[in-house]
Image (cartoon, rainbow, N blue to C red; front, top):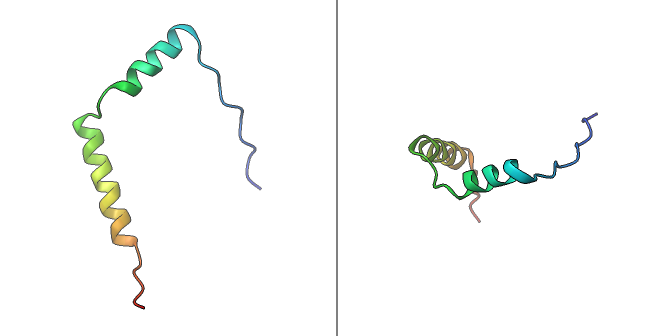
Length: 51
């Protein structure tokens, strides 16, 4: 059986501000490269059916 999902933490104060700042930053080159690699792998595994 799967483990139960823990409740989502509520961010307040400095933690909330730091989280929002990080979320508003554009992705880094490493993150963009990783996203492209994931997309390439996902597209490779996709199955196309002919109708």
